[in-house]
Image 1 (tube, rainbow, N blue to C red):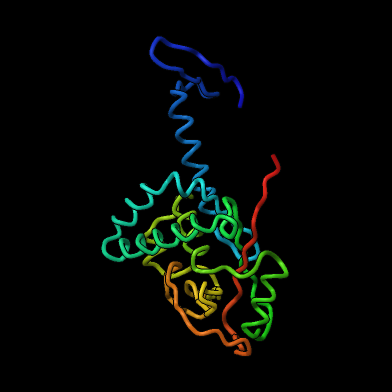
Image 2 (cartoon, rainbow, N blue to C red):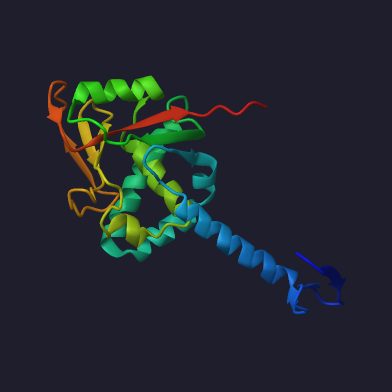
Length: 216
């Protein structure tokens, strides 16, 4: 940026832009944060890329998440109760649900996979297949990143394929919708089914996770 200098006034810090306009530094920071949040949303959950879940951020934002869920009416309040249950399970099992995790959506590039094959794929790339607790943590992380509860709870999923997960009781779960097949379910929708290792799935993709360890 050309011809920029900082000028202190008695009341606040101002910055003079290259066009001569004086602007409070606080406004510049606020605009930058708004643009950064838009970038985070744009670069959110994607096929073929790892998505970071930071449980510390979620824990610090619980009141905000609860408030946004309550604003979505009865449906939002029901999702918050689901989140609370998952958060409690995660707190009680810190070794399984570490403070930092990442999830991964496979790109569909096969005719079909059996349910067992999809579970094996998740082990090959990470720590296994996501369960319903990790999925709820992912949804809360997306709220922390700025995605609206309306998009997550009510609008059709923009991801191309439904994600298949491994439930804590050993069963299979199906998360979200599918834009490729016009399954107009929201990203937070969760269906529960029995696990059949030999069942051939032509539509869904496996949803994997891995633990992230930060070196001190």
